[in-house]
Image (cartoon, rainbow over all chains, first blue to last red):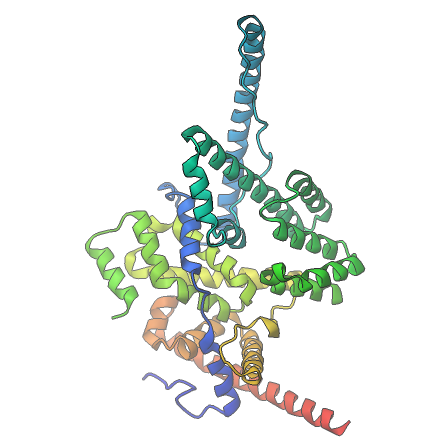
Length: 246
Length: 194
């Protein structure tokens, strides 16, 4: 026989209040759409992915991804060298023909590429209202080549930013603040006005906490909590602040 | 029939392409997964990331998930993600309880808001005192208002086990609430005496 729920039968007032307080639980508006964008960005799942259901498969998947990225990286390096070699040859020949050799762009960060977190995707996927139309208007005005070039450059820059911060985050989680610091310094050098600067600053706070530098961590945390643009990070900042108090 | 059941039935008739199925999965179950993670102990600020983990696993295993067991798959994965989260944060010595200031505002009156936040934080404490298996059954029955047989199907455990876990979970919950309210009363008396 189905028992009656606590709220329907003799629950005390305190029990009733606590149970009722969970009625407001629910995802923020638009969360499912943002997640769909992230998941669809990953493409269709591989049909060969098998095995038992487990959240740990994420880690295995990430390892496989790192391996794949390393292979792709090696391939890219090889291709880069080939292009450099060809450019060199072309510049030698252009001296005689009067044309210029194409400039080869340095590839972004070399390092483990992991999946962006939901927060990253939130920052990346949700430009302020109007920004999209401005961007699309600007893109409409440009030629096809420029349009592709801009979009690729932006994607490349964002990808590199995400990868650097993922490296820093993994190092923080792996209790390796020195490595995290290096990744964050590299981020600051390469992207002084990066799209994910707030995330990088909060990671810097995590590094200070992990290093046990309490005064600096508290001072930075207070600064960030007072800054309206870090409002979304309030929970994480306070959580890190609590660690300095333990 | 719920929306989830409707989409499951539709899946049985004509299997959807992966992206459509993923959309349906999110539309039907995202809120349930989010609530479950929150009630299984993941704090507000981490629930978005945790639910992304759940759906990433589902995304990878989409071809293996039978349409009628989508909800069960997602809940089992959410349980594991929440348990991993709890373990990782205990190891790091972080507080797993929610921050009083981070509970969403649902009422207009500031005093009511404060009461609501306090109650939600206390509920987290009470749920946190339960082992995960009891907590899951308690959350599904008392907060999600599922029937015992639905919980048995979802958790893949016999109905008798659901009943015994619910009984034990209620005992733990009632005992913890008693202690919490007694502690609060003592605190108030202590403050009044000073």
